[in-house]
Length: 450
Picture 1 (cartoon, rainbow, N blue to C red):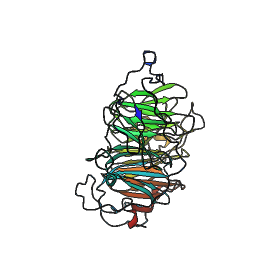
Picture 2 (picture 1 turned 30 degrees about the horizontal axis):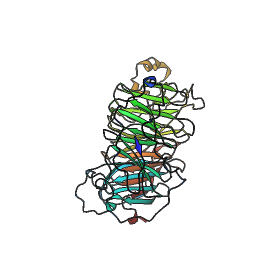
Picture 3 (picture 1 turned 120 degrees about the horizontal axis):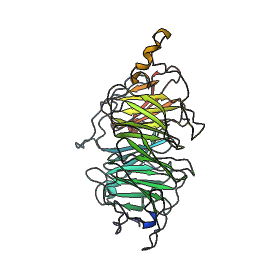
Picture 4 (picture 1 turned 180 degrees about the horizontal axis):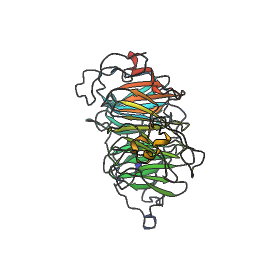
């Protein structure tokens, strides 16, 4: 299932993990987490322990703009002023971009490209380092990296090959140690990897219909989960030490599955009648936000009990939700979609109790006031009027894919786009309205902006 790498990336694993590896008969129950150890071969040596920070290194050469094989729409060349409202398209096309993702505390983000990967700091914005794998020529193909998953700010990352010319096979997860600038372990599968999530003690690998959970220390498989078709690789895991909560699609349409490993409990939440398109888990594993393929409503659930706590409305029209994120203080939720508008919502939830969270009674300013003589019609108002609307918005470009997170500075939001753009904006929690744009960069060419 796992093998360490030598000076060069490890050779193909002679014993890849199948899509459905059998468990011992005594451990076929769903609530059993840990299969027996594989005694057919000695366990691989554990990967080096993660260190506290990635060593910054000088940036490599700038990307060439002559590549015509663009898979991302191009952008104009002007830099928008720091103001509210819609931003102009900032820079020429992100032709080589394959993947973007934030790290676990949203302080950094990673980009996978056709030639390697890059790591960036959000505030202040700067490129930390880049690795040009195509130039090294030590992979099975070119330099394409389709998934980059950071582990906070440490030297360990998970990489999956991607694009037309992948550096590693798309059915392998490569454990990269940036202090050694090489892979020190790998996990092999019989189908393409759709996503990877990391904790300090776990590696979670997402396939089309199955999720595998491994110990980080020895790459031992400890759990597997059946899911509905999951081409987006949807999965979320809590990051609080000692408390592991994992959320993934269930096997039924509109269902999410919540694994509470500490309590050895599985919870199924029928979140939507349509298929689940996106979800987020709070850092402490207490709250789940979900959106369906309709993209109009976002629902917030208690992860422990599965009860609905709040419902917010992104808009009246259908949309594809790209990302959801909770603020660290659990007061806000931010949402991005293909409509090009970033929304921030107030969370009116009492999170003091994990088991008995209930919505806090608070008036919704967007719901029309019903005077006493007309109160008889309140019961027949459509649900449209009872969903809460966003308090702040930031307008970008419709049809572009953006992921969002709350910044470390108070009341700020970081936005990363597949067009190669990075925005940092600020919202007014009292007056709401249009957010103020603080920064805008083309992160594929940071040297142009420094």
